[in-house]
Amino acid sequence: MTRPFNFSAGPATLPEEVLQQAAAEMLDWHGSGMSVMEMSHRGKEFVSIYEHAEADFRDLMAVPKHFKILFMQGGGLAENAIVPLNLSRGTSTDFVVTGSWSDKSQKEARKYCDVQIAATNEHSGHTNLPPPASWKLRRDASYVHLCTNETIHGVEFQELPNLKALGSDAPLVMDFSSHVASRAVDWSRVGLAFAGAQKNLGPAGLTLVVVREDLLGHALPICPSAFDYKTVADNHSMYNTPPTYAIYIAGLTFQWLKRQHEGGASGIAAIENRNRAKAELLYNAIDHSGFYVNRVSKDCRSRMNVPFFLRDESRNEAFLAGAKERGLLQLKGHKSVGGMRASIYNAMPLAGVAALVDYLQEFEQRRA
Ligand SMILES: *Cc1c(COP(=O)(O)O)cnc(C)c1O
Image (tube, rainbow, N blue to C red; front, side):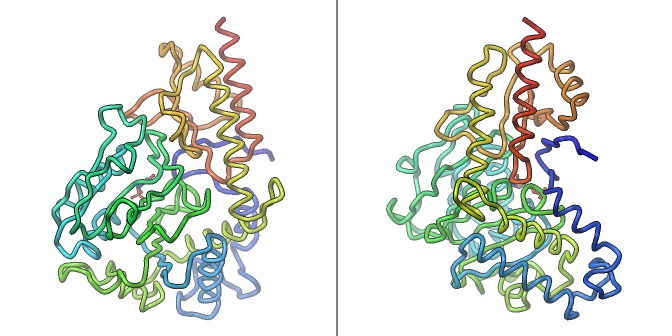
């Protein structure tokens, strides 16, 4: 059976090999007589799944030893509260607003601390990024929040800012939900990173948090125990029952990532090469047509989420129907932006992007 190509922004397509392995192991994981869903999270079988998943992610993303990797629940939106509950100490925080997700984050944080907008790209309709040198950072901020890939607006930081060089000692907090594990991360610039799993890692229900050890242990007294990073870290993400099946699938995805080879590279470098090639193919097709348009500045276009518009928007419904007929699913843009969006996460093969590009050209020619 060949499956259609699924361009959903999330929950999103997963590597077919991962789904097949999960299917094969569904009823009996490694001779245990149990599905992973049925295991005690404290039993030796699940503990080994958990430990492999953590070690594989650390290895894959080169996460230094002084960072903890936490497997939590609540998604990206819960982190919008959990981060200020743990890191703000009830004082001041700086936010860089570059699209819907960072805007949501700053609004939620206002419940717990004093929020300042250090920079925004709102005037551009969230189609560019304010240069770090222009950010108005406060000396006493407890952290600086960024969304490093804005899933809805298709804007991505190609490089993490060096806050120290900007005169700030505050840790950088990044929401990397929609491009986690799609490229290397310079951890020397990061204090905390969080990601919902359902874009690039596995099923919804799991939230990955990577946090520098010195940031643990400062939660506000009102912080729920299950969301206190120190409690979670001290209990190896098992203070309460973690999302066991989602952790298992994420672990299979990490192993899949480690097996990838592309352009002489392997692992994250390989997937990064492939993601660059996929994005280039799609943006080139859009830019070279008079029929489609992407409005994001070239220097900050997302490799993961590609919003685009038909210049003749009366053709939107016909475009989507034709795409579906060809096995190109979930291309409709987010309701707040309109138009189309192709999410081309790690698990989307180059062949999927090539099929979309063929369709873009065919649909345009049919109209001419
Ligand atoms: C999807 C997404 C979220 C929201 O995650 P939930 O799991 O729905 O809470 C947050 N931030 C970004 C950048 C996202 O893409």
